[in-house]
Length: 391
Image (tube, rainbow, N blue to C red; front, side):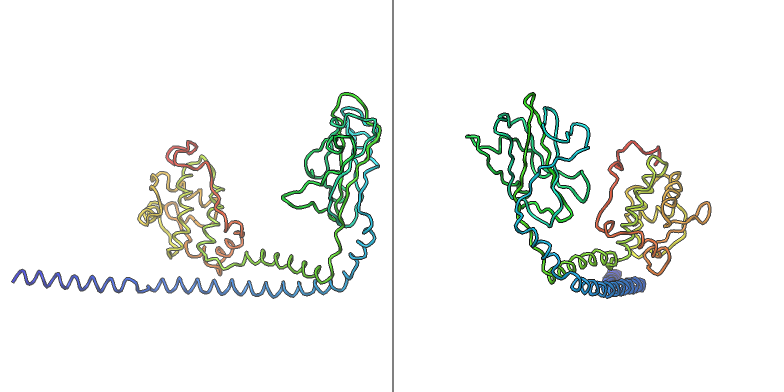
């Protein structure tokens, strides 16, 4: 009789366990509420993106119309006036630079002379000629370096390697052209607002250089037809639209909160009491929001116990450190509010709510770069000796 009761009890227990397992996948009421909030957030972000796209598309159409009306063939005609000029000559030296620079030849040992080309429609350098008097026979003492200047500036970036004068003659002493060096397999392009400059430096110990002529063969860049110019402008503005739209990408609230907390971790002062616990707390808060935790007002020990039970903390800090950690977090962000000497309010839910002032301010503070990066403090390691005792 007793065995029958035990068997009946086991069967009833198995039935109830099976029923419980079958119900475990049924969404709870708070799951539905979380999904509803996320759906509303996605709709709001999508509406923002549509409005931004419509506004930018209208501006793009206006600018394209202006380009088509004004551009015409002005660039074509500007280039036509330079089509027969396929060489740039560096003859007149730049004066007044001071230091080791000289204003004119002769160029003596230890000195340098600089030449700059005038602005002109865009072109690509193809070859270099370097001519000196035939009586000058120590060409290896001369060092040639080209620069690309912007606007009216006399400073710019180097173009290609430093060349030696003996590279511009063959073994018989006849001048030769040196091909313009390629950068990553492509020719340099000099725009209409850029200029080439060249410096010739005398590295020798004797023999002055009485004169020097540097010439660069070029390939002019033809003008861009109006339709292509408008298309290029449209492509550039569309790229800007894509960059702006990234801010309105419908990331979920916990993901945005995670990026925000990662940025706030860098604001936690190092060496303070509770620093380690404060960093772990800021790391755990976005995970709590993703799990659907509601806003709560609890004591510090109770909060850390809940985080430890949820396996969101590596180690629970000492009781004497907990309030110090919460104060550090509250000092760098509004995710915590102290209600009394022992109680704190933690805003797990409203931090992800775009309709709440706190959630809206967090979204405003998070940039697309923050969403796609994971800033870390290299000095924050378990064995780092920078923390105060008990942190």
